[in-house]
Length: 347
Image 1: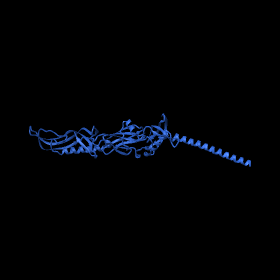
Image 2 (image 1 turned 90 degrees about the vertical axis):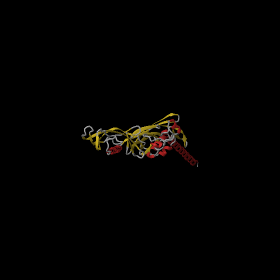
Image 3 (image 1 turned 135 degrees about the horizontal axis):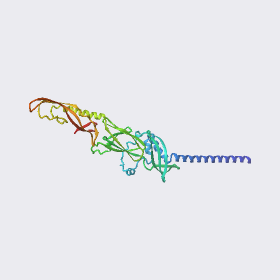
Image 4 (image 1 turned 180 degrees about the horizontal axis):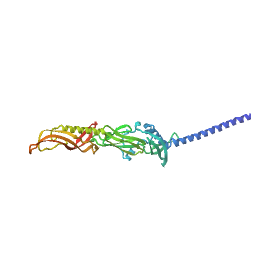
């Protein structure tokens, strides 16, 4: 009987040893898993990667939900910016392509504060950005929690020359929505918008009358990124003005007088006029437009009118026909009205 009891105690001891061994292995595995999660997922670099991954999948709600992403009023004040900048660009549809996200560095610059650097491509353009994050404690026991010490949200400041409307990643915006409604309509306009960083913004203007080159603007900092949209007249704009000028000159040519009223051409003849003068336009001025201080302008440009009129000399009564070109010059200013039509002022 004693032999049987010894076997039973031996089996219990072996079972206890096995349980202890398995428990130890589980504890080691759990510790390794926690360490791995804290190193990769719940580290400073892992926290920033959550933000970048959200931008890469166009999840603006997820990106904005991370602690410290939304700028505080204090951060706005420190940057000299108003606290009511529009959030128009903080939407899924305005995000570009963010790919090849790679951790470059994670440095503790002060107790609990890390500078984390990532490389990535915006569209096809290699780029990088550094983030400042702060440890805020732990959660669920051993896991580290973080927040952005400085918001990664940047500011895109757009200066639209000779217009107010532009497109950014396909979204049409009007800078005048930030202007004082009581202020006079400006020839050029500027506005600022909160913008996700990193992100690539394609900015341009294209309309019937005006165009500007397309620009790819990377925003890779939480500061202000400035861009100028320099619009220029399209061929259609120039053709419209040319048509208006030609029509105006043709109307002037219908006046059967030596000095057509409110017109840029005319002649002075000291002799007696027999019959009515007949005008026509021999050479229309070629319209060119460039931006002035408050409108588009055409400098004084030459043309040729033509007159045919019978003249009798006061000296000897001889009859002759004046059949000649009469040079003239015309300049003008062109403004685009709010409804898209044009207003031409001669000078």
